[in-house]
Image 1 (cartoon, rainbow over the protein chains, first blue to last red):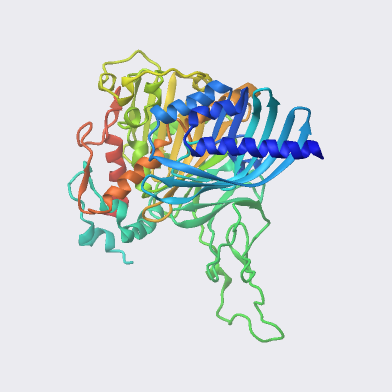
Image 2 (tube, rainbow over the protein chains, first blue to last red):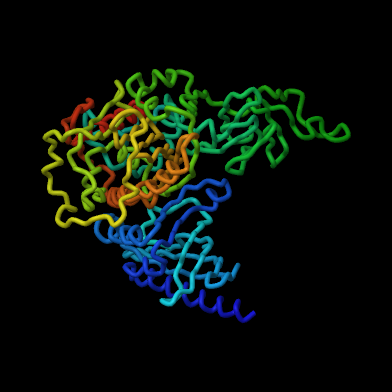
Length: 158
Length: 415
């Protein structure tokens, strides 16, 4: 009982830090939420239900995380925008030693420079988090979007 | 809406003889959008519907769209593929309201009218009424109430539908040279790796043009240059169908020729970055040549893409005058080994709605759409590579394929 409660509070605080970092445009910190060889992918409910492996975005290892952000800052062209992550229901689905599995639902509202503000995506995440001396780190984060339709483009991670 | 509207309507007079200019009203006019449904999408064209591997078994169906028209693509009991309008012949309800499924017959949920997989009306609920009262009148003939059925042709697993009885068969429609470039990519049985959909905040034609526009590639999409992963002046060129409607733009690994883009000061070259992990740029030659990028368009709604080992078909669906949907069906080959599959999945970071070298196409059409609205009679200019519609060997700094698109559009629309 205490294990689950501790895990829950730790994961909740950790995911709050993650969402705040992205929403506050501290994207250079993104890779540090993951273990050195951590994996991240964004897919859709449709692909998951059909058993299809395609991702919209995927990274494995800190190098790829940093490349995504360097490209976002220097190469890719898009209308400037920010996210507001709205966390939903969090479930702890497993505690095995120092590794905690969790699932959570979320919504992201996207606002552009001109003020256009709308629900961008919603869905659920499946996170596997290792408790390390340097704090919790994502071994794996899978983001499953409810809709397959991405409005315009996806450049900032979720 | 009348037949004369396009040809004789003074509102839709093309501003020049050729297609070196286009008026902004092509992107913003709502009546023109309605005319396109009839004269273009339901006109003398072959529209891409899907892949035959998406409906492998008898009764498998997938729903899609030709322009605004909802379509059912279905595998028949004898193994053929039919395309039917997804609209009940009675009150016009969608018959299939799920993206995919398997059926023995097509039954409308509204009043239970039933059609076979050829679209023939086979059952009308309470046809004879109840207890001798009600039901259809004596003049009712089932044969008058079948589903609208499209002509269908399948080539290398790509399924196309046409509302037109006059348009030539698919092979003649795109011509031998572009048939050869389909053959080049679809060399063995395919496997669907997944789907993406991108909602574009612009008229469908802005994305159609974007694909034909090889001029923008190294200027808008600066990822390659930024990370120094490719020479801007690789070999390649443009091929066009005889009528200019369809095109192929390709890049190959050959010694550079003296291409103007090589000397152009591209925004990205100010600073040079290095990728920490370049595994997504790995390219295993698998199609028997050195082509790294090949983008083929088949008028009006299909793009066949090979970018390194990223294979995909992109289907363009108009969703109103200022919105469109791009559906990416990402492909591999059935016999891909696990490491090849992994390579394809990794490389797909380059393309799709979050693609390093494609995401900009999602927003740039919207930039034009927003700017065009104020001034429908003003014009875009397309001067690169002259005013003609010719193939271009060696250089992709041309808008000839875009001019070819407008030629096809004008011929369909009679504008």
